[in-house]
Structure formats: C-alpha cells, structure tokens
Image (cartoon, rainbow over all chains, first blue to last red; front, side):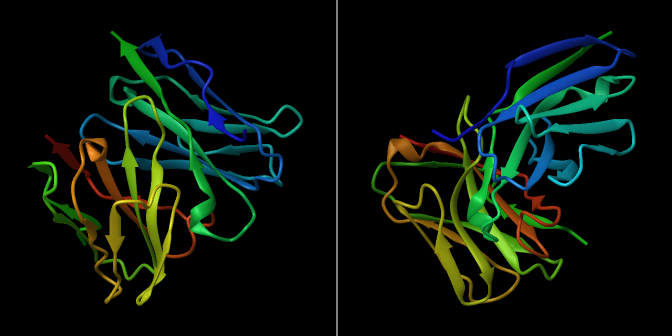
Length: 114
Length: 114
C-alpha cells in the first residue's frame, strides 16, 4: 500500500553535529512535502516544505532534499542544538487539491546529546 | 494573535459518554481539520472543513461528528466514547488547502476513555 515512512524511529546526535532525518514515500504522484517538528506536549510545528519541482530547499539551519527517483525525502539540521530535540515527521500531499490527501509519517525522535 | 486554541487540554471519559472538543482560530483561515495521534503512528485525519458550512470526512471519521457554523470555530464531537478513541487530538488550520500553505496546529487534547 501507499505510505509515508521513516527509516529510523530514533536518532541521537552530539550537540553541534549535523542531523539527517530521512523519509521514504511511495506515491510518485505526491507533489508537495512538509517537515514538522513536535516537541513533547505540544502540537506539530511547520519547519520547511518543498514542492516536487524542486530538489532542494534551505531555511534557517535546515535543508530539505527531495530525490524523486528513489522517492526519498530528507531533513538536514545544521549545528544541532538541545532545542532541536523533538519528534520530526514528514507529510506528503497528493495532487488532488484536498486537505484529505495530506498523509503524515510516524515520526523520528531526535535526541541531542550534550 | 492566539493562533489555534484547543480546549480542554486533558479529558477523561467513561465509555459511552459524549463530549465536544473545542477548536478556535483567530487567523481567518478557511481550512480547518481534526487529527488524532496514536503512539507509533502518524497523524490521521478525522474530519476537515474547507470553509464555514462545509465539512467532509477524513481517513478515520467513524464515531466523530463536526460542524463549521463560523470561520473561527470547528468543534469535534464524540458521540459515544469508546476506549479505542483514547488518543491525542490536534486541530489545525491554514489559509489555503494543507498542501499549499503552512498548517498551524493547536496544542492538542489528550483524551482517555476508560
């Protein structure tokens, strides 16, 4: 079946190192992807998005890479900080134009070690 | 500007009881939706609305009702609570469909059905 999934459920990185969180999607028709950050006890917070006509997009300390050939999405966080500890999950949208078509992955727990 | 406000933050219900989860946004967003988040799973769409007076079912609508009488409010009603509805519920809103612009999430309602 079609799914959005994450390769690793947990990721631990040293403070100051770069983090890479991966996401695989199986629907080649998906045309929009979003990364969210969810801190404990809080709602998801938008980080960055990318459309399928792009392969890279940069924000402040974050970069999203999209490889449509292998249907893979990644989130790179530069110089990871303690405040980056959270669950990160990706979401994909299929081109039907409906909010119904936004599908979320299950998330990766990022832990930043001192 | 409060964003998306959900009440209550925590709730315990007995099986068979009914209740309404409240969601309000002050950003004049057209699109609003309700998700549930269960351990090890991504957010699953329950119901959504593309504007006042318009609602539609998402991925897991059974056992829930919604209405959208105003742009600001989008309450979620549990008709007869069941233990399977124990979850964290998130309300979200965005100016356009969730696939095109940033979605803002509330802080969540943690519901336990005993």
